[in-house]
Image (tube, rainbow, N blue to C red; front, side):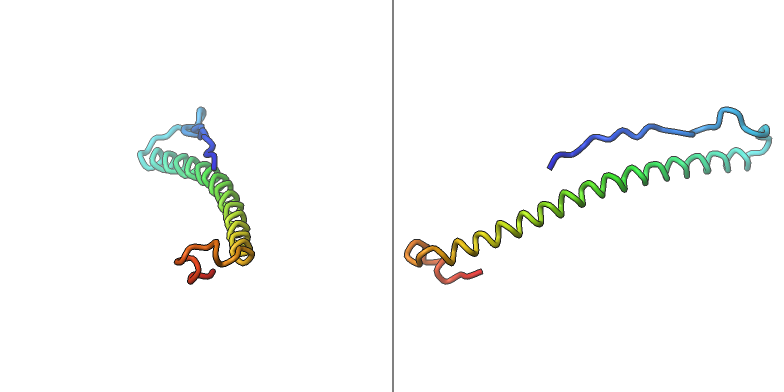
Length: 93
């Protein structure tokens, strides 16, 4: 299963032209918190896309595994008992 490298580019860290001059520390902290929340929202979007890709790969792997399991069960039924080992004779899926 290949893993894809994704680059998250920081966006909107600090506005270039604030609408009003920031005179209080509270305004500065609110602006910093807002830009941090925007960055986290972008990061959540990227992680969601990555997890959806992984989920698709896992579902495909599950289907292939189920298909292989069914094929091995059919092969065991078709093989004569003498070809199976003594331990495998007793086990049945």
